[in-house]
Figure (spheres, rainbow, N blue to C red):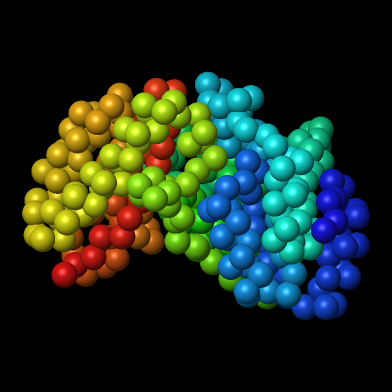
Length: 285
Ligand code: PAF
């Protein structure tokens, strides 16, 4: 595995790899866990070469968020990626991605507006801008993202369609199902912030979501089921529920009663100093 920190060298390496077959990009912020490694394994099944980026992107963190505390473990991440057969670890520093005078912002309206977009102003502009840059830097044939960040995936898909970053420029954007711990908690780099009491309580999030989905799919009132979910989370120890909502799976428009379009239950809730997000499919039965 080559570890590259400068764009010039990245371009040379990509030109060589492209001659030899398709390239899949897995963008990450590091602190890798089984969820990321699943993306890498999926990528290896689909493409000849896998490039993983590790960049803790400052523009997607708000002023009072955890940018400084965000876990960084480059040596361990690099070891994990090498063992997975990754061709290139692209690990630019902030000055490489945002050189002096950087003045461009990619903003995707609509899908970005609600949920994490409302709770974390500017977050999706930061995500869209850096992912747009990564796509142009790596020019992959496909890029893989975890479905755990469902709204992020919807924002990236919208951006790729709107800016003509789809085939042949970047190719497919592939969502990979969320990887969960044995008790159902979605894997996340932020789970390591949880104390052991919080970690036990955190498992109530996927449990309460499944119960809510069962109620909605059985024809229950959506608003009532969502209110019940919020109460269940607070009872379990979450002090704030940023949102607990049913939304159209593609447009992310709020859904007030379950129709035939695919819907998603989306939740963000805070326990201690940690903000957890999760989402699950809701189907009309
Ligand atoms: O999901 C993430 O880790 C980040 O938001 C991403 C897509 C790598 C952009 O910084």
